[in-house]
Image (tube, one colour):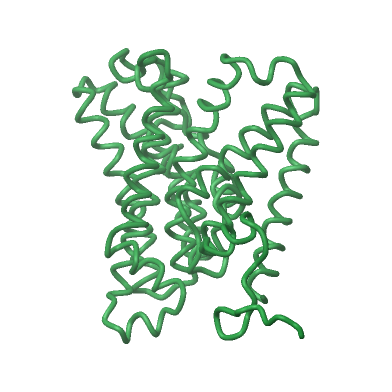
Length: 333
């Protein structure tokens, strides 16, 4: 007589083996993070065999420092993507925020006030984006494309395209200094990942961000202030772009109107590779953090093995397309 195996979940047989059982207990987001992290580990193993310098302490710190800006702006992009939007103005906001802070410091205004001015500039840019999307009902792509061009134009107009150099040491320490042997840029990045990760995963606002992106109309009818959620997401994106801009200016000791050009694509790439859906409703800051490091490790490792920058762009472009393609497949399942 055949022995019947007890089923769970309405007749489905329980998975065999401990690993399969553990995987079955993970949420879709946790599975996505695990697969993304596995990809990062595989990249690390590949480049460690390809170059003897990859796993040196100095190179790992270099990768972390270079990835800090991408990770920070990708956090904001993740919020926007989860709501179903996109922010193309990130790169321009990086430059504009740094230029405003640089002008304040050149005028002799104390560094803390100059930093606040830069952060407020980025937040205001995000507020404008959010207003255009949430209240004027413009498509996010068009709205942020327009503000991207305008913000870049303002950045060049402020100083007629001339960079602001010789910034105070008390400002540049954030970009060039170290604390306990760890670059300050990396510490700032980790702090922002923790704060904004907590907001998205553990707060009412975070739940509303997911609800807005999953089904805008259903969320609105359920009492979620969807306009305010969209507005907040774009303001977060602008604020984090300003953080990135100030760190970049501190690192090179110069505020440049051309800074951040094309960085919005890196932000989208890190978010999508990390599991954020281009259709909204999905994503996590932890996944985005790992996605940013995948881009950083790719660039660093390809440099170490002698791949030209042009070929690197092709490879990263293929990775982005593959990530979006996989996202489409997951949506169909």
